Image 1 (cartoon, rainbow, N blue to C red):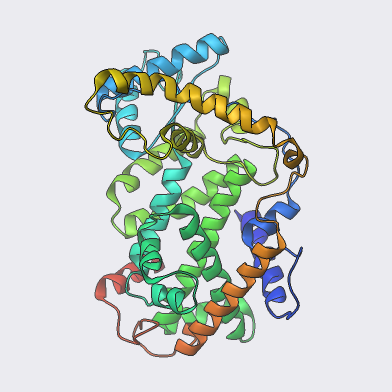
Image 2: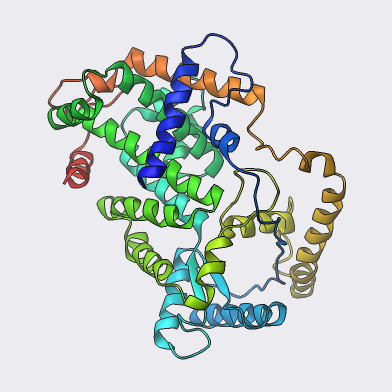
Length: 408
């Protein structure tokens, strides 16, 4: 974890220096992804083959369908690589059902020693952004984003619910750099001693310092998945779990600790290989590994296309043809596209490593910093009450209580 925090600290210090430079950033990589991609090694593992099985139209959130799905995955894994323990990734409701199945039939082919059940990293990240969104609600953060021109009012409000993952992630990364900029502006004497002293006397300072620390942890969590660092993933997830409890996200508070326990006690026969391939590397670009469930969602998008299954649900024969042929059509289209993208594959660069995107990121951070400065630097606030950025009104008791829980 200390290594992860130091890595994020390097990005913050590097980017804050570039913010002071009036020259275009060009290839200097100010954004989070571009900076870490510039330091990352070319992936050692080759790009994986990723495709969908024929779909089914029965309700997935039942014991019978989850058990049936695990059995199908087991049979396919045995066919492709005899003797390998299968790994299945679920979102929260299905993960709970899968664990119940493993606990009810521990000696079967679905037991914990014979089948690894994993919580989807994409869904964990979205739940965590949703959690901090509940904490930020009413703080004036969305108003600041809107006034800075980073997002429109409706889009900024959607960041609180993590309706669009990439936009939400981008908004928080811009916010992290802007908050760090203001924190360094308010810096007096030794940083850690100064931060602890102000946090104990100013609720507003404490609140935004917690936001700053949370966004750093989220960057570490995403960094672990982008680089396939399994141990860092577990450390970051353990540090983030208290947020689910503090903000009453019951289902994730119950099941994420189970997921962490499963990942720490993997079967010996699969442990080493699993830690190499627990994320998916779909391309040869640096810093671009993604969670298994995110790769699955991308395949879903290819299969569904623009219209998806709209108009087919009332025609069983047409729906059956679509569920069987859709994944195969998506595979053929992907292979066709790959044949005409060979020139792009040789660069190994991350898609954010472009001058235009870096300049846009720098502009957004500076705009947000100016807006927050005009509202009042929260790290210079000495009021004994917790104040919202935009209205300067005292925030509700629930937020104050949450700050106290996290502080304890």
